[in-house]
Length: 329
Ligand SMILES: Cc1ncc(COP(=O)(O)O)c(C=O)c1O
Image 1: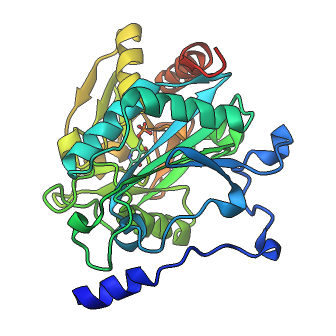
Image 2: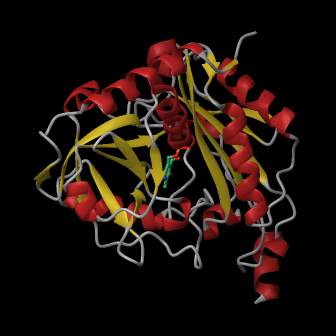
């Protein structure tokens, strides 16, 4: 096995795309339309590459095994929102999977800011990945000597504005959130197949999001969002131990609730708690704070975004506009 892998590696050649392989971007999340930038500039290991030439090796264990970690970060109005917290979580994910990020937090901060500048963006989304790097075909990470850092700056429009006014429909999916003893959901790893399977279930059911339960049958989270319910003026959300990511937006809801004098309880939640809730909302960097008005066919509350949800959303939006690490300072 080892000899074969080594032989394959010896023969490894960098694949250069032909000029006619340049394709029009198929998704709106690239910067060019709004900024006039012809090609996105993507950061890979200290250098910037055009979209067409930004490539990683087929022997990168991020691709072969989902062995790596990532963060999704938003920037608003020329400022990166909660950058320190995202980098702190990235470093925690790295430590948990014994991955050494090959740069300092300070250099990573500058690399994120410079990627945004290179793409002439003021509002958008950063996808930051650290992969285990190039190894052989065996899964042992000992083979991977050099982790790779990739930073992509993009435009983002996840849900249409009308969803923030009308609310989402969610369905409980059969795919369970991974057991923390198998793959801890607190690690934001490149291994998202569990969530992808849940997302497929939501698509098949014509729902906007999938509600994922843990092995005990309690609510863990949605495919890329934390879940909150409101009952009699109090806010409830599953604890991290239920299989939820320690969401940055989740943490901001705790801050806003404290400002508003509303109690937040981290406690196990069942589907029943969602069905009988007065209000429900999801939180995530991409989706921000978004109301849920229907779960498994049942209307939540009166079927409209409730007052605590809308106040929390408004305060969150204000924070995104007014705070963050300046990009162009
Ligand atoms: C599985 C999962 N849960 C929750 C979240 C929300 O976390 P955050 O608010 O930090 O984006 C995300 C998104 O990052 C996620 O991928």
